Length: 361
Image 1 (cartoon, rainbow, N blue to C red):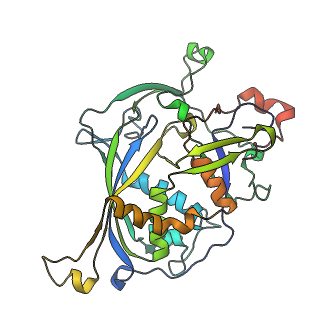
Image 2: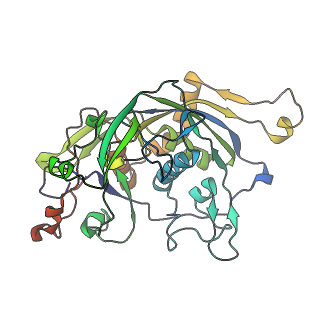
């Protein structure tokens, strides 16, 4: 993806929204806003891997013999998208993250926040995401070999914010989908393989087409917060984006899809999350007045799609630079002709490349 090269880097920096609005969060005892449950299915479109632990990071994480994606992993992926689409803070950055539980951005109100310091207070958030358990009794496993690399010095020109041209942190790193790599990862050069490189690792990943079911419980969400949650789950079904400019401009069409798990730069982890059912709990005075009549409102099928369309309409119609870049990163076009890989060591050592930036998208 460096300028003047035929290949594309696997990642790009997405500019964030400049204004972060903060307010006091609504806590559990208030019983206001929307509360309910969302039932979801995740299908992996490319190879998928979530490791067990540091001691055994070659096998997929399991529980009672079934592959599982931790709810914490799903929460992290969804929160990252919500920070971009919803204008949330960069929670892990001490300079930019929220620093008081009394004044929180939209994503900290939704997903939770921990203050820093010896008397740190906690806002636990209003969203609880369960672990995603695989549906298939005998999922297809595919063995792949990948080359692990040790952390290296960042090539600063690759990390400039597209809208400012500066290394100012006003952007977030996302990885492109690589539809042509449904069942494969980049081959390890023969010269490295023959040298028995210590960073070659064999993984037992899940082949495309496996299904995971999970639920999300939410409470006291405002309309704005519910809208953002539904959007980062459902995303968009049909977008058209133009990548680059001039005679080399590339037009891509397709839905937006998620990236989850290990090996994102290698094309792994592309997933499709589907909302199957949305249940709204009734008002507290109705919900807790009877053990039989819950008064819940249940949406499935066409009625559910109508609710999703209504809730996400404003974000879908948002054509800000942030959303334009986000769509260009998340679009899944099976005819995408681009070749993705990192520049090799010699590229970075060449003086002519020292100041090369990434191609415009």
